[in-house]
Amino acid sequence: PNARWYIHEPVDFDIHRQAASLAFGKPVSPYFKLDEANVIVSLDCDFIGEEEDTYISIRKFARRRNPEKSAKPMNRLYAVEGLFTLTGANADHRLRIPTSAVQGLAARLALEVLRQKGGAPADLQSALSKLATGSTGNDAWIAECAKDLVAAGNANHSIVMAGHRQPVATHLI
Image (cartoon, rainbow, N blue to C red; front, side, top):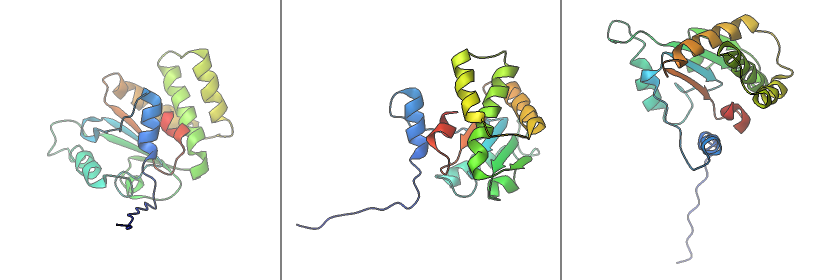
């Protein structure tokens, strides 16, 4: 009768749910439809290797990677990471930066997407600009990635995913 059950999870995968719940104002859990995405941006997110529900992500991602078996065009994967991962190894465009710089790059990417779509409210641009400080270089990579995101986003076929090692702010961006 005095027995107790303890569970310890060494990796906190709950960051995805925390950020999604903050963004939508109610408890939610993100569900990524990788098989429907034309453009995928991985921000230090090894969805093929270390993230939660990897087996689902691999299956959905792989459906669009074989042009001979898929009726839809092959998707494009952009990976931003500090460590070489399975996701980065499969990326069409991989950018290696320090893990600590991913949040700044995410903010710069968001600003570029907003610029290409015609701008955003001043308060949003100001907040993103503050997060983007200290992140320099890679302008051509960011511009091309944003161009692909905007083109795919117009048809609601783009995904930007942040990994479990990133802070909530990166997920919210």
